[in-house]
Length: 375
Image 1 (cartoon, rainbow, N blue to C red):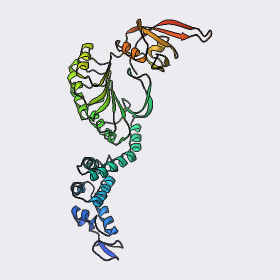
Image 2: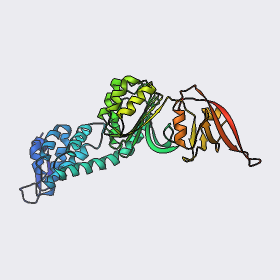
Image 3: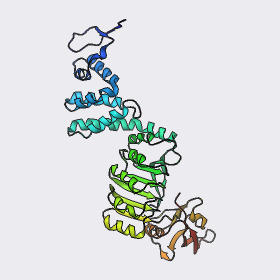
Image 4: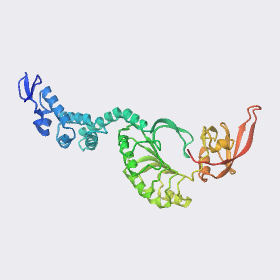
């Protein structure tokens, strides 16, 4: 039985009034529906929009082709349709529509590229909270926390951490491309592989990448070439050695390269320093004291990590560190350089001064500290 629907939507080229629409309306081709987006009638444009949305991924090639020749009004309408199709980044036509918008954002037509960039930005902020919640439900952490590495005294950053508690896989990490505004990512554990790095490379605002306790080797590190230029790359307790020096030299890092607890030798690091003269290089064998430092112009402990090396060695907050193995410490940078010489399990002698709460006198003492690993 043929079903006839009566609609009062005006159709292009017809007078205002009731229009009889058969149930096979979508028999028109995609290109015809795209033409209808420029119809003078609002109803005709709306019908074309509905039909193009119904075609989902099948109509994407024609939509992308039409963008290249569309005027300003039609460009806006096509971008709007693509944005609706891309609203779910994980299902249906979402990934393909997103890819079209990303390609369009690189168009030589500045107006078209700007429309696509604005659409991507709007989509990104709409999806960020949803994606964060999904990843956290899978065991990731998103939020502010103290990031303590050998290169900083005490720094609180908003970041995403994906470690051994994460129950998802590399396909689930496709969601990373929607995390606009997150600038730091920590990937930790032996499950981190090239596919994880591939998905991470799509994060739009990533500037700091920390890889912790992974099994990534020299060949795996090649995947880092897919990243946009990183401000900071940190490799912490990594199995890479001197064989990776040439690979590290070629990575897209413009600010800081931090190597902590790797198998790179002191000679290997010297080779790196000779080749990478325009970025800051930090090298440490992995020994971890377990303190936060309050005063960068001195070396005053603001916090000791519970169960960490400093706490077990008897150091407490407000202690001022004066020397390690008789090497004077005047500022945090001195502490960092001295600690970089030692591996987990090494013993160091720390000279410090402490104010006696009873008498108010400042006294000096030494502590024997066995360095641990950064948690």
